[in-house]
Image 1: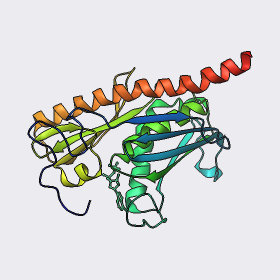
Image 2: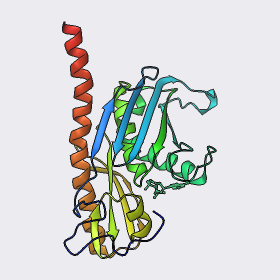
Image 3: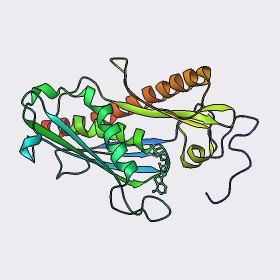
Image 4: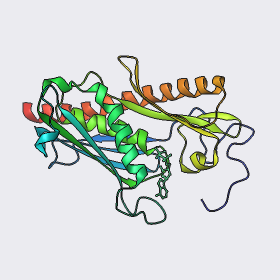
Length: 245
Ligand code: ADP
């Protein structure tokens, strides 16, 4: 967006992209999209387009990084040079290194790492198009890809952000709202265990606004969680039907 719009949300509570304050962007999820990977998933979350490939559990390389009592989870978040309007350098930026760590920490509690000692899994996240909230969309897709690789999980991890634009707390900010708004609160949860695995805040909120944002984000997460389960069912029910034929 080249010029700052006068208002990000109008008097009726409608945002620039036509959504209500508590409305998610459209989400599309697909599992098993990369046959060469052990597990994979693709997410379209609004204009975000993200592909995730998972390899493992397999022997760790380099070997000295392996742990005798558990599996090591490695994550790489990468934005393609064409994923944003100005070409992004393909070299890993400070932001990508940080997001890789944050995403790994959000996913790790869901994985039974002690079942595969001395081994590792690699999660490769490729952001093909970015429009705000890519860390959340990446977590949602990465968790599905790990499940698709057949790795036992305590629960799927699902993520969604809420934030503040002008004086209103809203769900699922897109790029312009993220940049021009007042705050952004990404949240990741394991809904069945009622556990939070990521909680960040960029900007300033009052304690009340923070609470509203977190509960709004959690509601958003629960809606996406239903879509995650549906995406797994879609792939594996089709496989089952094919096997029965
Ligand atoms: P998130 O994608 O999780 O919201 P940030 O808040 O760091 O993470 O980034 C917000 C948005 O800024 C991204 O989704 C993307 O649309 C945009 N962005 C990030 N890095 C760049 C970049 N190098 N050039 C242009 N836009 C970028």
